[in-house]
Image (cartoon, rainbow, N blue to C red; front, side, top):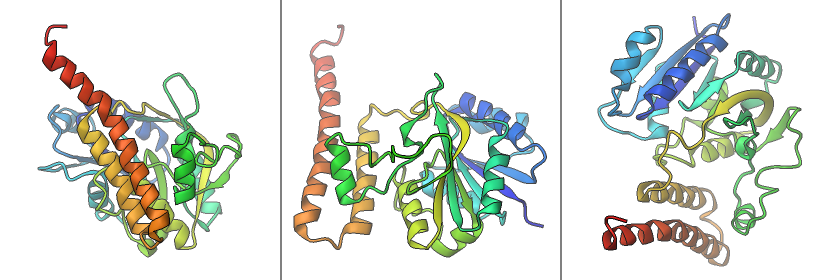
Length: 286
């Protein structure tokens, strides 16, 4: 008989954070027919060797290469036939009532294809990316210009359920029936952008995406080194993949400015890193 929920966590060199995450998930799963899959992308911090004995009830998949976030999630999803799938970051802590609250909402709203929650940082502040809009060319341009109200859907209440457009990949509850219709995560994305793409395809498939006022802690950024050339390249490459996939049909008068803006933002992020490296070469002891 199929489980109610399968929780999929992709890990890469976050052993301690993942251990804390698993403990919180197992507490939140009490009384719920669920299972947990961890897909490890060839961590070098002995994640699998350390945590598998501590969590014998968790299914571990140890990849022999880093296959990226989308492909790793799909590996676990294909192993299960649960009614719901939760994609969860390893740098999160799930509150005890969160899983049950989200599942109850999904059960009573069959039109909901997916749902996200209220993400808090370690200081307890709400993360604006808990709710996002699809980065259409217009929304993307506004955000790049510093106008983020539309992108973060700031008109919505933090304390009431509300329909949103993009569900964060840090906590993304998905209905299996919806996944079967629209397909799994697009593996063209190595990391970043796949949650936007999946959310967009849910909406295009006639499903609803929801924000729900149940809490998790998200230690955002602590599972990713965001001050590296690799991060900048991967992040902005994901933006280009999404834009070309869903808006490549637009005329050059619309598409060219967006692509130039993406490249410009990437260069602005890279320049300080390049300057720091140059400084270190000239002043190795400073």
